[in-house]
Image (cartoon, rainbow, N blue to C red):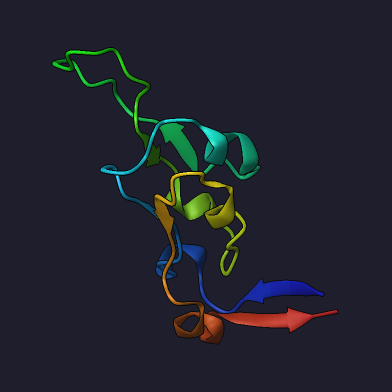
Length: 95
């Protein structure tokens, strides 16, 4: 079954958020997400130890509405999404 949006994608605020405090910069989300929602952020310039850059939601409108597949991919649990029930009104399921 396919989904059809009932409003322009730009009007639907469905996209992930990343908690930078717990993101470890592993890039698992970016490697997994085919639409290309995630990208590494800028490195921390004043870090005492060189660390991987935290991930960021670089292209939020690329996120497929009601897709939640990235959440379990994140080993640190840094990715959250809005409540899907709040967004069902934007989607129609078609065969």
